[in-house]
Length: 430
Ligand code: GAP
Image 1 (cartoon, rainbow, N blue to C red):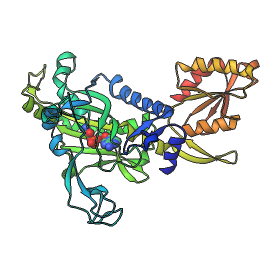
Image 2: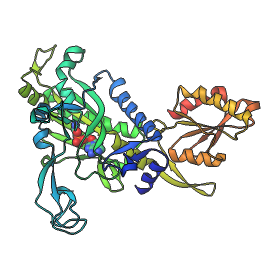
Image 3: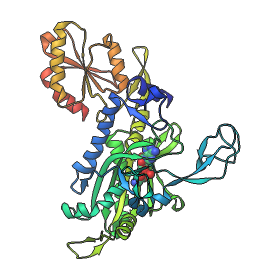
């Protein structure tokens, strides 16, 4: 983990938020390569959850929602963690379920009794800060899908079973953020609420558990032996859940939740129907049955996938008798898919190299790398940010109109005519 954290800072993936002012605990900024990786993950999720399917539609709801939503959903009363504070020297606060015994893990002082702490960030709408103006930053995007359920139903041609997907920021005032971006206070959720007939929830629950696992291994290229499914025992289920499976990854600090797949029953539609007095039932056009659909929900944050991918891809090996650090990212997600590197800074190579770069830019995430020292050093830099392919323009290019593709993982090199280059890279990336 330490090596990956250092690499993310060194190479511009992640920085602590507001670092020049000492940072803000649990908040991070994403730098140039971090943004590229994040966008790639986000786009692949949307592509596989929405674009490639005909039973899921998208939604973007607001980040701030009124208290009524959170009262109905149960978040005002149930979205709490038990908190204990050190009464000794350090005064540190701990999540009660993360400490054993009655002594502070930091300074050994006594801990107070556990009390419940609500994780939602509260703010006010308008100039007067009273109870009537209280609103909350959403701790999950899911409530947007439930609150807009009727709107989507009435304005699009969806039929149960169907899903509503959303990607967007969520906020949780975590008592103990940590493990880098694994647990943060501001993050980007990617959630899909899949509405099904009440008696078909088991079938769809199993479908989505398998489908999500397939996405991690086949589309993101995460090592299958570092993933497993963990079924929550009844006692640890959230207030809305009948059954939940976590897709877990073997992190350096142990197995941890990457994504949760939950069977939320009709809990949310039912409570919003009760509270808002708006009929949220669904009329089956074929059977004329009217019912509240049940919901299967796969939910994951971009930050969890981000750190998982980096940890899974990080490797050290020896190339040409020298140690190298390499991120073996799947070409689907690599922030740079193709680096175009002229062998030298001689003007006669720069022109053709830039032509090659421009010809590839529409199809791939391309970086032009002319300045990072000799070619070996530039390859190492690209290895470290996970670039799967480097295209080298050398003096022979000027006569044979061909370039070399160098592969990150094997370091094998292949000579190819420029006019075949985009097709060949397309094959390699996919
Ligand atoms: N709508 C369901 C829901 O929000 P959750 O298990 O509380 O369920 C869903 O969160 C996912 O969000 C988790 O599986 C994890 O990927 C991510 N997540 C939760 N809390 C997080 C945090 N503090 N920082 C980063 N990611 C978080």
